[in-house]
Image (cartoon, rainbow, N blue to C red):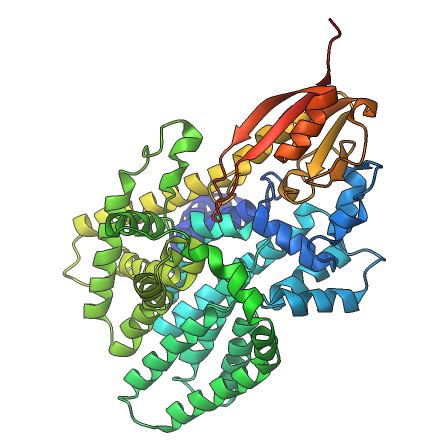
Length: 546
């Protein structure tokens, strides 16, 4: 073939390639964008209180141990203080495991987080990269689950790209907490359970059993997912004690036996566990409030209506999107239940209900607001995303004669709109310096700016209210001095530089006011999930002689 003939065919070959692989190219591009959103600007947002707990656990120090270590008359700079928030030579693996033992929370995430920090260095970026890495692993996991469920690579691809740019998934992929791990084990356990329906091999049951153990070691709420699987398997098996039902029971039994050592730990520290969880019952929801928050939370799978405040639109600027998302979700569940076999739609309904129903029931019976926290509803969100993905894949790419080109174009537009919205909101989340899930993050930034702008700042910290979230935002040379709530061990008049008081008690304010002039610079109400006293920053200055 001549060069002229080759040149003549090149454009045609290019067009044929694009026509054949355009969907694959598009999906791959979206996947790369979603991965990028997970790993960019990991240190951009402030640490919030739950993440300080992660630092405390991986360091091996007790909650108050570091504060006590530096509670002396000598200030310590932030750079030195933060060294004790990471693994260091003063604490060995034995101290770390003892901290895990007394902490009660499932240990698997903290083991992974400490491994990352030990291998790759001490920084907020490295710690949060553990969650980002686990979140990236969820992408092939959701593809596998949908492939097992629908036996369709197209549905799997649509589900994966929607999941990849989900604002909720991107948001929690950048948090040093176990939610990405929880998502991963749910997907792996579900995929391996569905795999058992296609084969008589034992391998799927071994993988499922291992995922049960890993799930329990990742998040206590995984127990609700297992209960959902029980209902699913026995309903599909028509409540008969079949060979598959027996294998399912044995696999779960093996997983529970593997979890038994940690269950004993929880029982030993049950009072501590109850105390740490008591905040969840502080506020009871009204029915109207619950409906509003549920609508917001369900929408998070595809859009983030709470982004309104970031753009200065007021609280409800993007709330017009919520009705469209809710209608789409409800219709997708209806479509799924009417167009798929029982073993398919029942699995998705199981995911949606597995944590939603127990949390709603607990709030109704015991009081509290467990059901409103999005991080507790991850199985529900997964079910919703899978249901919508099936609807979009079927309606957009179906070749059934009843689906006219006009209808197909409409559903293609809806699919494109959801993907565009996901990319838009995820990009905003990735660039923002704080977000709604960083409770008090805006306060942290404002206080840190006031201190960092001062000359040679010294922050006097009330030991009983240390506000550890702030130290990660302070400049390394900011000095901290931890003092007793009741008695000041040092002479305020001898302090040099710009002196600030963080959350001082009335006794401390009186002590300072005897020798120095103190002024309230900032006061912020506690906006976190565990409401308490407001955060206060005071400035101390020498009195001007008259």
